[in-house]
Figure 1 (cartoon, rainbow, N blue to C red):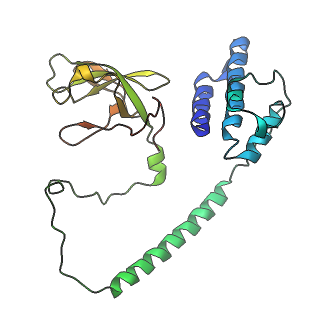
Figure 2: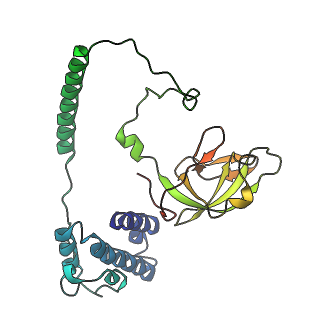
Figure 3: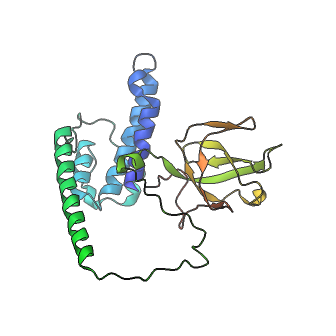
Length: 250
């Protein structure tokens, strides 16, 4: 929860850019900064069970009352101190050279492990047995051999969404227009599910949304995101538990 709140705070300050408001809208800039201090105050409380030392350091920088190890969860909603000294960085950044050295060391270990696995495979007895596909797997596509790196995966902004409304698009046999709540905003998304789902029953359904795909226009309707679904029946991907709209999928 602390990580999710920190992610929201990062998006909030980047979206409002208080450093650009200081000259023309100083009161608005102060309001944004105060909101960020409130979020940081809450993050310190939520992070204490898993990062007690860093949470205590952050609490002290915000001039929090007493020991953070003794506060209750409700303290996350209380107002932080009105004034405090200039804070310092909680963690030091890692230089690019260090990252490259770590990546090189990791590549070497992966190469060694791969070579060892290949040697082990060569010592295993050969067999002519093959696995016959069953009725559930016979029509599945082969897994792609084209891999992506972890950095490319991190570029995907995949969120939990909740369908607010759904209606068919006139003139399109398969397309429906969905309003999807992504926590911090509601997006209009076009999805090819018109004939595969009861649109009247979709509101309230949790779905998985690729949020940073480029916008598109289909039958004159703008689509700002992509709802993920599986197979020819467009089986909508959802969540097992009650993740709130806007939660990032990692």
